[in-house]
Structures are given as structure tokens and as C-alpha cells.
Image (cartoon, rainbow, N blue to C red; front, side, top):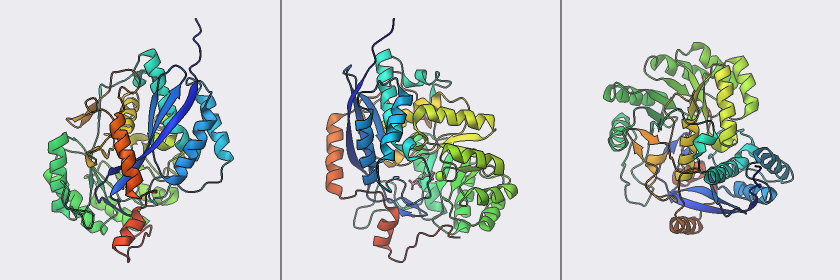
Length: 423
Ligand SMILES: O=C([O-])C(=O)C[C@H](O)[C@@H](O)C(=O)[O-]
Ligand SMILES: [Mg+2]
């Protein structure tokens, strides 16, 4: 028997801000609050779907336009919904707003805007069918998804504030201390270090200190393209046998290909392969051996599965990238990773760095370094309306409207320059 369509009647898009520590990266430092947009997709069945995405001003304007364009469409018509998003974006003249703080990104705007709506539609589909989203993606191949301890060099506090619970990490001892705390609390079995902050030799020393302190755990270093080709080749030689992959050592497909020819370990990226049309040249040039997927800019969960298939075909490894995020994003990441057989690396997550959320606690927990796949219908999580309202108020009060790690750093250290590559 043919069921009636489930029509989208509108979307409530709520920008929120949550407290973020002073995490350092090559373009600057995290501001005191990270921004996200929470999407509640309303349908004529009375079922509400959830999505989470960036909340920079320009992105919010695109989300608003997209929400109007998809109103009246069936939540099962994901192709038509993406077409509607694509068409309306073509009529807008908005620039900026990628939510990634001045790092190189040439991801598809359509895929970035479509993504949270696709996830909200899958959430509705799952709730109506009484099946978890992982079932809609082909079924889970693992019951829990491993994540890595995502270490950052950081200050003890934002200027003028009290030190946070993590304290300072600006040298190898600080990194090891941070890793120990994170691993004690969450049981992670892999470690990623956000580099590109200090001269490469200091970061090599940090990685070697971690290797000594945690001999059995796979390690990764990601300087976000802070190094020249020559520096990258030198660091790769120093870290041979120590890191499982080196992430975005240098900018661009050609530079990465030059490094890849010399480096013994695989090179991974979430900077030079961030859209489908980057895959062909990356494979032809053999620029990268591991792609970090991220449903927030690869166009949602179904298109991330398409990416996984392409990676499998061309024998590329697949890992998962993260930005500062809350529980709706984590739930989506977990369902996707659970249903992606060739996602064999521990995924990245910024989860330990936040203390606030819009999701009712209980379902999403990192235990032994992994998150159990939610088994409830849809994403399997619920929104906490009071928390959503409080974090929206925090957004209104905090004054931050666009992620700007470089501007914030320059407000503290006027001599800071965002140069790429730096060393
Ligand atoms: O793997 C990456 O490149 C990231 O996680 C990008 C993020 O923006 C990270 O650098 C951060 O949170 O500062
Ligand atoms: Mg990266």
C-alpha cells in the first residue's frame, strides 16, 4: 500500500553559542564561544526532525532561504530537496560563512547547506518508520564507533578569565598531561594532535613525547597546511614509524602529491579534498591516501556514503573530520560511521572540549573511546528545549556572529599573521 508523503511545513533555525576553551591552531585561537545552528524541521505528520550545522551569518541566511525552498516537499524526496536548495542558492549573492575560521575550504555551498536538512529528513523518516538512521543507511556494521583523543595546544584561560579544567598545553609535557586527562576520562585508543601552532621541531618533540607516554596508541598530527613541501618532507622523515598518518602537512593537491612521493606514511586531508570534484585530480596525482569525510560539508549522510564508496573504489583510506559540535552532530556522525564498512580509523571529535549541549543527556556517551550507536528511532536523541533556549540567549548575549580565530588572536597579539604555509 502506497503511503502518503510526509510534507515539510517549515524549519525552525536557532543559532546557539556554547563555551569553548582557547584552543590554538595555525590560523589563531578559538573564541570564548563556538557557534552552531540547530534545525527543527516540522512536518505535516507532526514529526520533528533535527539537524545541526555552522552558524556564521552568511550560512544562516542561506539556511533560511533553503528552508523556504524545501517547504512543501516530501521528507523522502531527498534528491528533490537537494535540487531545491541548489536552485535557491543560485539566486542569492551572499559570500563567506563557511564556519571554518579562515582555513582553506572550497567545499560545495549546496552540500554544506543541504546537509542539516538531509539529516533532519532522515531523522523524520526514521521516527516514522520506527528505525534508527543507521538502518536507513544500509544497517550498522559496528555497534559502537571509536573516536580519537583530539589534543590541542592551548592557553590555560581566555584572557581575563579563570583557567579552565584542562589547563595550559604549550609544550610536550602539557600535551602529555592533556592526553592523560582525556584518556582517563574517555578511554580513547587513538590520539590526534592539532599542530601548525609551534615551529615543527617543537611539535615533533610533542609527538615523540606522546609516543613514549602512550606506546600502544596510534598517533596523528595535523598542522592544517602550515608547512612548505620541504618542511613537510623533513617532518615526515622524522615521524616515520611514529604516526599512522600525517594530515594536511602542506596546502594544495600538487604540494601534497610532492610530499606523498617522499613520505613513508599515508597523507590524510580535510583541506584539499573537500568536494566531489576534488576526488578525480587527487587520485590522478596521488595527493592523498586518506580522506577525512565530514557530513557537514559533503552533503549529509547519503552523500558521505557515496564518498565512502568512491574511496573504496580508488583504495583511499577513510577517516572522519570534526569541528566544535554538539550532540545532534555527534549522533549523525555515529550513525554514519556505524553504517560505513570502510571507515576503519577512529573518528575525530571535539566532544570533550564542551560542557553544554542542546540534547537530553543519556544516549551519547564516550565509553572506552567509543560511542554506542543510538538504537531509538531516527537519530535516537531528543532536544532539550530549555537548554536550546538558554544557548540561544547565550548566542544573543555573546556578540560573536562569525567564527574568526584569526581576528580573535590578533585582538590579543596584534603581531599575529595568518600565513600559509608558515614554516
Ligand atoms: O582536522 C581539522 O582540520 C580540524 O579539526 C579543523 C578545526 O577547525 C580545528 O582546526 C579547530 O577546531 O581549530
Ligand atoms: Mg584536519
